[in-house]
Length: 188
View 1 (tube, rainbow, N blue to C red):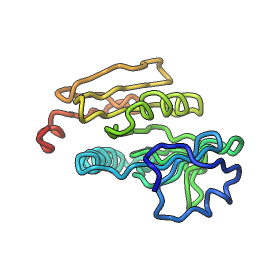
View 2 (cartoon, one colour; view 1 turned 90 degrees about the vertical axis):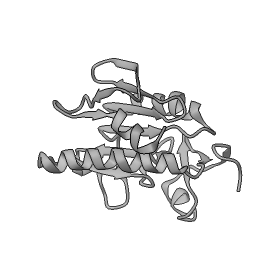
View 3 (cartoon, rainbow, N blue to C red; view 1 turned 30 degrees about the horizontal axis):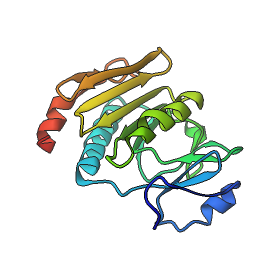
View 4 (cartoon, one colour; view 1 turned 135 degrees about the vertical axis):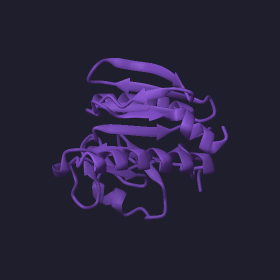
C-alpha cells in the first residue's frame, strides 16, 4: 500500500470512489485520492473519550444533533469531488444524512493529529472545512499536548490551548471539555 497521504490517481465521480475496497482508508480532495494512515492507540483513546463527551452532552440535553466517528464519509463537494473522514463530527441537520454519509459540512469537527501528517489537519483540512461551511473545527495534537480551536462563525481562528485547559465548544452555550481529565487518562 502507498505511504499515507500520498496522492493517487484522480477520480471524478462518486461511483468511482464507492468502487474502492471498503477496508481502504482514503480521502479525496478535488478529485485526487489520498491514503490515510491507521490511527494509533492514543489517537483512538482520544477519539473515544471526546466522542463520549459530545454524545453524552447531546443525549442529556435531548438535542437533535448526532455524533459520528471515523470512518464515516463527509462529501463536501461533487465537483470537484471532495470526500473526507473526520475523526469526530457533530451533525445537526439530519437532511444531510442519507444512510451512507453526510452530504455537506458537519457543524463541528475534531481531527486528532497523526505524527505522519500534521500539516494535513492544520492546513489542508482547515482550508476545506472553513470554505465548505463547518462552523467549528478543533485540531487535537497529542504530541504537542495542544488543542487548536477554529470557530469560523465567530472568527476565533487558531486559538491554542494546552491539555491542562478547559475548552468551550462554541457551537453550544454550556459545553466545556476539560482536557486535563483526558490527558490524565492517557498518561500524556
